Length: 242
Image 1 (cartoon, rainbow, N blue to C red):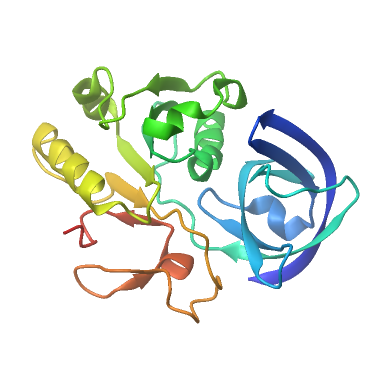
Image 2 (image 1 turned 135 degrees about the vertical axis):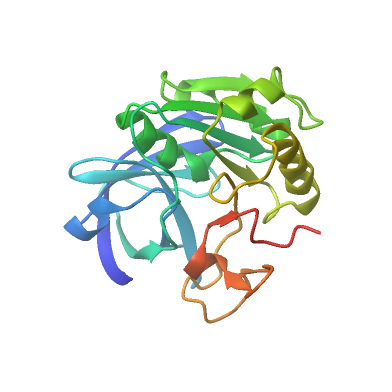
């Protein structure tokens, strides 16, 4: 982790409540992996967690809500990268299922982008309030599936059987009730819940990003882990959901 400065090159709105910023960054941040994020200087003394959705040759793009305002040419201090890369299996013909339940899919978009660039197949399921996310902000190669408020989507069982790996992000930091229910469905359909198959992605703001405050602790079956240091993706065979 290191502190750097970035310049905001471009700003555009992708939905009434979502904007994207293109940042000119130094070489170290041009190699961010899917799952890693940044802590940026915000309106208060606390840093804000910025989630990249695309990494380009000389810049990266982050997604922010419209409740913060920025200007082109503005310089921001960035601390990062925060967290570990998603443990996804890269390669052609891999099948990746991404699920956003009652929250926008922003934490999963860089993973989708990198997977598509390696000729993987990507399906994104939007459930409950996640359905409000604009389809126009997503790569056209993603199969977008709009589900229901009760966490059910069309051909759910077939989609789960199709997927090599599943990554799910929820409104709450690992929504135990929903992930436990879905993990049981995956276990039944695939005859078991295998290691490296289904991951829950922690979605809260990281208070410190350094493991000092312990606020992002995830309860695991063996040793408890910290989202900012060990996450944000956790194998559902390892964490305590109930």
